[in-house]
Length: 359
Image (cartoon, rainbow, N blue to C red; front, top):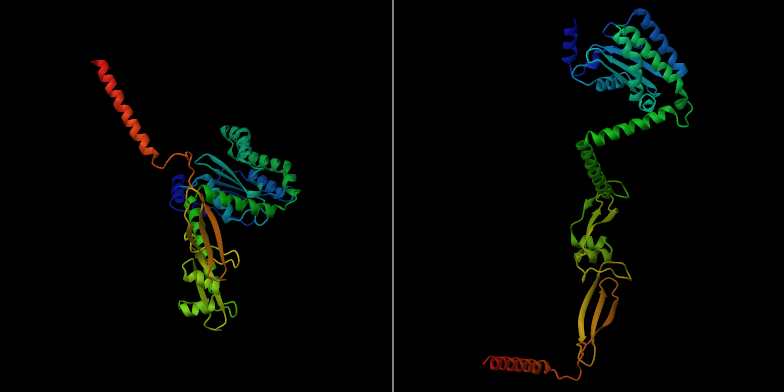
């Protein structure tokens, strides 16, 4: 019979669906290890826990969990049976005979009060000694008593809290899902972020296409003459000179809706697409010219001419070109040639003197 049960649990991809959920019973024994009096006492304990401790406890005993982990098996039953919903006070105790595992699955709001440390202590001090003595039914009963006693001791932590238990349960559940997606399903998280960004970009583009007057979709304008009539003069000059790229929309239904959207701006043309300080458009050009070259006795002049094609306002800025600094003003300009010839003659005389000394 045990081999048949193992095959039955392992041949399905969702072994938790084999476990039946009773309407009035909270204890499900698929192995048959519980004695009738112990089972009735467990039902009474669980029934009293709900009004006193505000905890909805279920106990499931299965022979095997199939090819999934005990934690995944317990979480699946918790989700399918909707234990503790919508209150957020659910608690599920799963005992697996074949794996020899005990797992306690609380709702996200109760997770901090029924942690793995508590379960390890309860199993090590209460459950395992009775199992070694050959009393599995009594061990399960005592483990249920330990959970009920602990819930009675810490019940004030979630009953007298400022934030309601159901609200905290939803918040902790959202945090748990986010952590699972970030650390266990990273590709899906990256894909979700990319999809959200792409959706936002597409949504902005779709809203640009909606007519502000009749909410119908507008069409894109490509005719230069029509674009010039729709766009302001400054924007048209920016678009014509290549300083910016605008997308122009016009409604064909009401003939009134128009929209001009800036797509990109070219800031690399430093001498052509400068921002005008008067009108604010990027239609100002810069022209540089040399009015007078510098000499040894007088500085030069450089002129910067800013002209805006939109507002027709120009500005001239005169900058000095400083003359070169001469440290030897008394020396003739050809003095470096004379210095070179004298150094050459001096070197030749030194070579002649050294040759005479050797002789």
